[in-house]
Image (tube, rainbow, N blue to C red; front, side, top):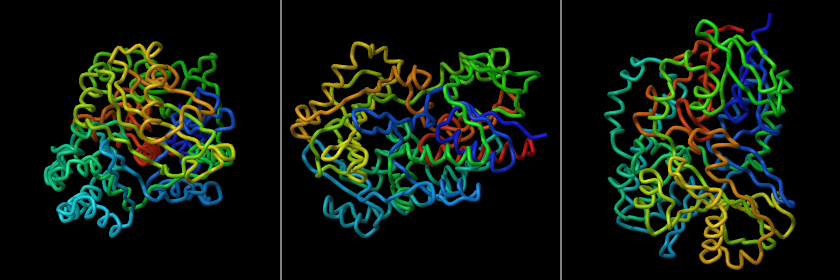
Length: 493
């Protein structure tokens, strides 16, 4: 009799887990609330433009290769990844800019040109970042931290790597120029962390980019989602869209299947949740079955910031704008403190500007450009009424872009849509509208983060941003590897 697995949610974590388990001989059913697979990697098509909701920074593409290899396939038969050069262009408030890529000599020349006195410090920083990368990513990213003993074993290494420092403190220790410090410390924002609060373990992101590059999937991130969904169904997996889950059934402390909103029950030998971890516990599991992850405990955990995203297409092109641009305001620490701690809607803002048509013209009609502007904002604990604030804030973002980087933007707008923290809360069912689940501080990392195997319910597993190792495409794909290993250990196919 086949071993049945139900996976809730078809984000990258859910798709990767479902494929891995289906390839191992399990019978997998993947349930998705929305009308397309992808989760946060949803695709919007509007007025001839294609907008990837996110994520749009693809690093460590070998993790996708592993998924296809597990199924006896080749990634290149399904997805075309192309390298992005430069990785990012960072624009500063004073008109200066900085670009870097994976070429060591070229990046060193850029550092030397920007701040000659920081070249040796940068080289030293990279050596230390590599040590963090070797420990934090290569060794630990696919290791489940299911017991305190697992954590205690790595404490000496964490002390040696000075993980008590923040990412910004790590960068500032080696680099003196205040703007370069920002360049080499902004990466935690890509996974929901404040560089002034996130453990320096996340300094590994910069080295990870350097090791394997930053890539783009031709056709957009949505093309990667469709390729994974196709692979899953080719293997015999069942993908059901428009199928929200109402409850995980628990009997004698063990998950036995899921009930859908339409009233169907799917029995299972194990359940994997790729949905928001906090809301999986809060909404899908009855309180009597979760003595550890109570509502009270979940309320007291720290959640990442949210995002305000403006997707827009233009009737003209902006060939000078790179694929990935980081627009940093004059304020840095002050702005992040407003977003993460005081939870106020900032007067100024920094923006990640994504222009996929720099690489892939198919994302827009001929002669047009496709963009999104992603602005970090407080999560829903802020009390901001986004029904009231969304349009004014959108207009501020567009006006700022026209004034500083995209001349003539407003008169050349062809289409616009927005996604607010309220949408993260309602459409994506993310607790408190957090864009990246739990904030990646030390006390919510590794063993301190919700485990890949539930601590409350047997045979319930997690894959995605809210479990170990954390947010970002590499972290999510690694969580799928962990979930696969745990299920194969606990419940042989």
